[in-house]
Image: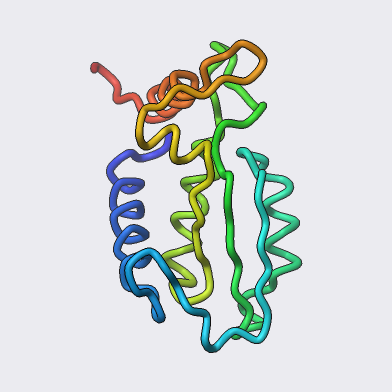
Length: 145
């Protein structure tokens, strides 16, 4: 079972890294040192597509390449109880932001904004925010709680 305390530490570090991104002014980030920008949307929890994207990005080998990610959550992969597993990608991206704070950027899309603001968002007659919350609870529930 994943360690919720360790994840919270990573999420706090990633949040601070977003705030401290060089070139950030308010909600805008200027990528002044960028030789290339690789941007993607609609990942929706697909860890395999994300893995392939990371191989292509090769951030270690390209220190002036920036990676912009959007639409991380509300995917089609679910736990057996039907809850959404897309939090796994969010967890991995938080760790990636900590590893490459200058090169990795998050651009919230409608799914993230709906989740953050608790605005209903549906797909195939399913309410996605609740499925996401249940997925987080499933993955990070503590024994005895």
